[in-house]
Every structure is written in C-alpha cells, then in structure tokens.
Image: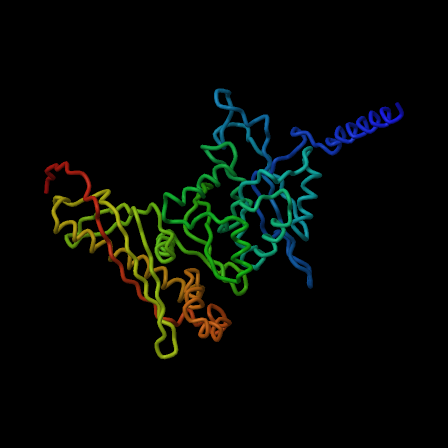
Length: 398
C-alpha cells in the first residue's frame, strides 16, 4: 500500500514539473517584431580618443495594421497610416542600441523574423562590417540567412521611405533583392552567414547596393569591399556589375543589347552562361585569361532583316560577343585602376593553381604594392543564338 502511494506521489510530481514549461512564455502580442535593421554611424562627432557611436534604426511591424486581403488597409506610403514603427537609437555598441530601443516601445524588440540588415556607407567605409556581422551571429534570435545590403548614403533613410506596393519596407527590399535571379545588374543576395565566411577568409567581394533617387529605392549595382581591411572602397554601376557576374560565372537572366554593323539594335536573352578562367606565369607575373560562352535567343530586333537568315544570326552572335567583352572590360578597368580591389576572385584562382607564387605575393595582392592592379587580364567570348525569334515577318517602312 505504501509503495502504491509513493508511486502516485511520484507521478503527480512529474506531472507538476511538466506543467511549469511555460513560466517564461512571452505572448505574441507582447513582442515587437523587428522586420528590418538599418545601421549607420551616429551623426554626433566622437570625443577625442573615443570611437564614434553607432546609430541603429529598428523597423517594428504593427500587427493591427497588417490586415489581410479583403480588408481595407493602407499600403506603404499610399495611405494615411503606416504598418510599421521606426525607432532610432544611438550607443557605443549595437547591443546597447537594442536595449535602448526597448525603452521606447511597449513591445520588446524581437529579431527572429528580421528580413534584412542595411549597412550605411559611412559605417562601411570605416571598417565596422566585421563587428556588425559578429554581433548578428552572436544573437540567438537573428537568423544566419538574413540578407545584408549596403546603402549608398544613410541606411536609415531607406527605412524612413515608403513602398507603394508592400506594407513593410523590409518585404519590399527583400523582394527587390531576390530579383537578382531575373536581373543581371546586381549580385546575388548575400546572407550574414556567407558574409562572415568572406570576412573570415579576408577575401575581397561585392554585395548588393541600394541608393535613393527622389525618395524612391533603387537596388542596382554593387558595393565593393577590400578583404585586407574589410572596408567599403567604392561602387560598381549596373553595367559594371553585369560584367562582374559574367566574370564570376554568376550571370543569370540577363539581356545583352548590341548594335549590328548596320547600326540596328538587337537584344539577346541569355539562357545559359559559362565562364572558364586560366592563369599562367609570364616573366614572373601571373597572366589571366577568361573564356566566356553565352547561349540565348533573340528577344528583340530592330532590324529590317529576317532573323531566320543565317548571315543575320552570325552577325548577332559577333555583336553579342563584342558586348560581353565591352562589359567585362569596363569591370576589370574599374576594379584595377579605380578601386584596386580583386572582387572577381583572381587571387583565389592563383592560390589554387600556383600556391607557391601566391604565398609570396598574397600580402601585396590587392593592398600594399597591389599586384592585382598590375596583372594582365584578357577576355575571349563566344556567343551562340539557339532560337532566332519569331518567324512572323512584317514589312517595315524605310
């Protein structure tokens, strides 16, 4: 009998333990969902001998104003009410700014649903990117897959603008970022996890760039970082980024527009692109050769000639090859002469193919003596048109 009572008491105690699992539960209505984070240098100047403070803008969703379809709700800047609250705070470190933000909202900041982190230009040029990545990776709420984008200007200005299409700026920016798969004028979106790998490897790289024109967001081009000091060194425009993607084998969904010998314009929609890079040693210096092959179809032609004509197709292929060489040539020129930064991975190829040579010059590759800016880089291109386009012929007036 005593054993039976002891057994019952034991079962009851175990049941009580299991019922205490929600003692630290926070109701969803009490959470402040931070959908986007913008990080800048604080506007106030630092005192002598001190580092300049960090300014962070937290975009917190307002659930009551995120109504489902079928209900009346303002979207972006088209209505009177916003579906988000921006809280801007400053502090010596990013972690402190988050704590201060919790004193300015009835809901404590919660980062598990954060979609994008924006890095301001000044902050990036000062070399704070590694510190920011470290903070994000240490936070057990922020996901490693959150997208990181550099802003040309103030990052907070982007979050203070409005989208006519989405209720949250974070959703709008993330959608634009994901469009890299369709538009060959911005690099693939970069997660904080991949960013950390680039920084730890001390390799130069490019990431997506946002800039503002007339209070409208534009996501095009690239922000270029030098791996030796982890600082932003400058920008590549849309065309130069197109060349970057061709050189790095990441070209997807692009349209190459060129002029035929007659001066008529034609556009080839690229369906496939392949890049091969070889390196040889000449007089003690590495020399690089690219072979880029693109395959596509004629998407648009302003020519009066029949696109089914074999001679016409050959001319389209030759003009497309010239365009590939022009785009990549502009990119190489900007990286070597202006930015002096190897964002196309020539050093990585040299390290794999000639490790002994790389060990001797790696400290002076794209810093110090900057061997990268002195090496010879050549590009060969081959274009193949598989589908000439519509067979519908309309007589055009001359």
